[in-house]
Image 1 (cartoon, rainbow, N blue to C red):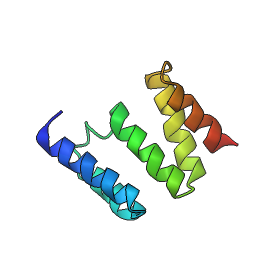
Image 2: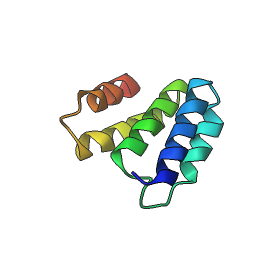
Image 3: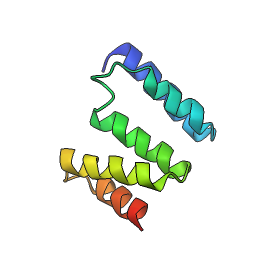
Length: 84
């Protein structure tokens, strides 16, 4: 992973852990457009959407993650949780 990507993801994760969800989401916007659709970035978005109780957005991202990697059980859990 590129240094900038790592820094941005760590910052987003830190903001998420502190409950600063808007800041976490804004950090992800600093990623290059081609990076924003990678599995690990979308997984971070699911975590942010879950904490913010943005179920529709979480469901959409989780369903996309299931398509990208259906073997990851967490993706299925996120999709089910957001759909409930």
